[in-house]
Image (cartoon, rainbow, N blue to C red):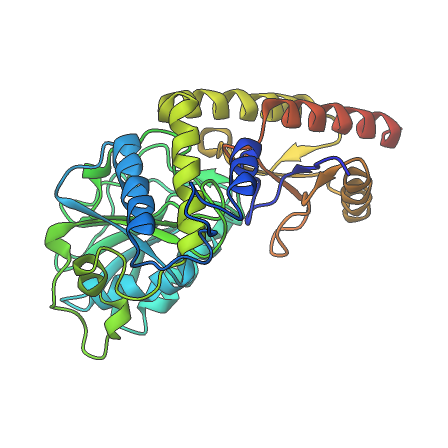
Length: 361
């Protein structure tokens, strides 16, 4: 069977080249006589894999020496707890609520201290990013938290909030490595890799070294202390070895494609094709205000639930899969991460045009 165009929000499409390479190495990685799935995480061979992956990521993002790179487990959802556990010294933090994942992180933080919502776009179903230029941030807040790209609602911060000198913590799960970013503007950047980088099961965290200390909330499990993981170079316990190996291959693929500036250009081109069509379509409508649109996740609706269902069914039959919108929003959503080829978006738009013709009077 031919490969489909996979518009899933995550786990998501991976570069075909990477999958083929991994397939070729499945039984014997570089003459070791074993699969990466089978080898010890303490072996010299695996040590090279994880070190090389980190070096390539540092290179791609130009990560300064005073930031640690950690390959962790537990998903971004576990990190919602790790952030307050490791950073809430004053038991106070500011949260900007721009979607379901930011809201979940905020609710999790409330377990550990005083989490304060300093801005929100919930009033309009998270269809925009609130003005963050002059937020009322408590002076003793330990950090300001954002979810930079909102997978479900299709919004993206184009300008980071003014944190008024406080540490910025950002969940970048669905825009990680889609464009260049200045790591020095953040205290902590983290994301689940299953959107743009690799198979589910790895969280990459980039944390400024002065924030990695033994001074954590009482009761924080050993495994969830950033210092435990940093001191052991992500090898405190058995990491998700194979998944990290795939992430390393994707880093090399991005470098081969020309790095993050080239990636951004590629992603802007793809998104423009889809947004331009949505802006002129008589049947389909985008749901996000123009200036806050994500390059990665594009939600759209017809305004008729039955027609939405029909569209998703027919699209699936035509080889465009996972276009159903998140259950909290309905409609459709096309996630067009790094590995989605331009032709995938072009063909989707062709299909949408055909569907529009057949379903408008």
